[in-house]
Length: 298
Ligand code: GLN
Image (cartoon, helix red, strand yellow):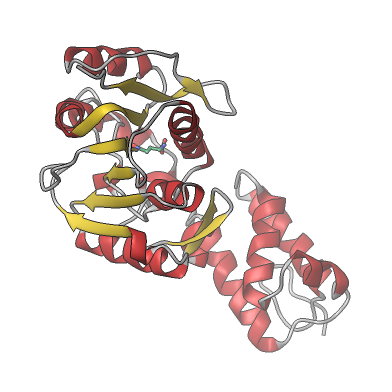
């Protein structure tokens, strides 16, 4: 039987299914149709890229075709691939996601890079550096840092218990459960410190702009992790003074900034008696993305 024009069946080879899916995604205006098609075919068939290439000519089984068609329908309805797979790579590490967690973005790796740069050049005191991640979500930033700094200990906070469960199970899967803890609270309210590094990717989208975000984001990322209030700065106004109180002398706060927000964030940091001693770090698109300040030893 010839493959149907839409929908997958066992008349498709892996290669023809991948191409047909890419074409369907493209005509629906999905941004990266070829990449998404490859990821979804890989997931539906439980194959990595090598498997997709080496088995390209084999026919789909009926189960594989049905699974792929279900994934295709979800992506065509603008559900992000990371949500369909329930997982996303960040900093080269695998992270499970849940409805309560933001999909970790490549932009956010800029925060990890800047935190590591500051950590490695500063004389952070003591043998066991302490890290806090405010609004940890899936745990991505905290766990990437713990992965890079082998003797560090870290705590992640979140308002969402569900996000904290996801972060905890990511920590366990990455072998980091023994060096991490997760606490439900508003920003850093339940933490005492002192911390050598405090990091955060807080919600920073002005409320009025949320309806203008892409469908993939506004319908699938938790608004608690996106909505920064009227002007987008509510979270920064709350967390920067809390972080300043909880930093060790010489410690640093590193936060993600939305587009165009870096300068005002630096102003808030300075107002909290932190010292902005370097320019923001740009993401791959050239947008100042990670903003930092240090607590000067008194
Ligand atoms: N970077 C995310 C976006 O643009 C927003 C994440 C956040 O508010 N921290 O969709």
